[in-house]
Every structure is written in C-alpha cells, then in structure tokens.
Length: 284
Ligand code: ZN
Image (tube, rainbow, N blue to C red; front, top):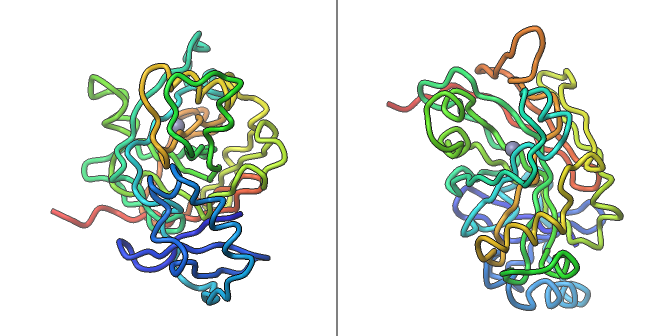
C-alpha cells in the first residue's frame, strides 16, 4: 500500500495511491498517526479498501507530509562511507544519532524557506523509516516487524547552525520546512530490497547526489534495534537513515549552499520523487 495525505496544511486527509490514482480514505481512517500505526490500522485499511467505493482525488491536489506529526524524528549521521569522507569525518564505530524537531515537517512539494540569518542551507536526500508497532529493546532479527513503511525525506541542514554554533546538531536540523516527507509511505511489501535502492538529488537540474542504500554503514534492522536500546520508538516515529555523498558542504573546490530561487528535486527507487522551491525568509 502507498499512503498519502492531501489537502491544505493542517487540514490534510488520509488517502492511498492505487494504480497511480489518488483516493480519499478519510471515511475509513481518521489519520496516519500513532493509533493507526500502533494498532491494526494498516491491515484493516488494506482489507477495507478492497470493498470500499473510494472517492478519487484530483492529482493536482497538494500533498501533505505522508503521516501525522510523530512523537520524534531520529536521524542517523554519517551512515554512508562516501558522505563521511566528503565531510572529513571518520567512519563512526557506532551510529551517530541526533534529533530533528517534528515542527520542521512539511509536504513533499512545499517550499523550502531559508531560515532567518542562514548562510549555509544544505540538502540531504534520505530513506526514512516509519515505525509500526512500538519498539523497545528489539533485536535485529525482530526489527523488521516494527516497521510500518518507508518514505522519501530531505534532511535539510543549516551547516553554520549545525557545526559552528556550539552544542548539538539539532540547531541546524530543525528549522521550519526542513523535513519534507513523502510523497507517500510505502509499506514494506512494496519494496523489494530496502538495501538496494538508488537515491538521488538535483539542484536546478544538476545531479549532486546519486547514491544507493547498498552503501549503508549500518543497515535498517541494525538501526531500528540500535535506537531502541536508548529510547522507545513509538508508532509513527520517523528514523532518517543518513545521506550519501554530494551535499553542499562536500562540494569541491568550495562548498556552496542554497539560495532563493533554487529548485531541489529528489527521489528514491520505489518511493517517488519530491520537489522544493527555495524561498527567502520573509518574516520578522
Ligand atoms: Zn541527514
């Protein structure tokens, strides 16, 4: 199944994609939230849509983030060897974890707003894991049983806030619009091999990232099991699994970053594509 949420920001309804078409399932499901992912929501929906007469939704509709705001976004830093090398970082002996504020979540094709006082807004195409059943101290063998699905995520990062402003990376990861998630969540049965997915990103049509999840340092079951040793992963929580080489910080001869007017497009095999137009901050 492919889950979408559609409609105006803050008023999105749940939907599904069937044969490329969008359908409204709000008569069957209230939202893709903790209750939905933690209970039998996915199995029930799968059964219910077979017999339901679902209203079709126009493809021009705005897509919202593919899930309701979760309790947390946990990100893995430096999970591809080539990205660790480009940022002059050592291969980590254990996963580096950091948080990203859930208020950063937006729809897959919403604008990216450069934060106030930002000079170094950067991109990171990533595979996101969506947690199904609650995960606490799960083994690697059991980890896949706690995954509801996968989605495309752009882990936007302000490098000055992240690296030069002291303390934890969270400051450079949490700005509004820094977490476009979607277009959809694909349930695991839709993905043949999560460890062999091409992921790519372009800025203004130029390919900058072109990696593959086969180059993970830490794989999906390991990551879920590992994080669950330190915190309980609740249904609907998002784990972003790290980015391959080709971010702005790694550009040669000089790093460069996003500016208003740029267009960022990204995609992962089986998980669709997204597109963000870059806007200047216009608040006070
Ligand atoms: Zn990242």
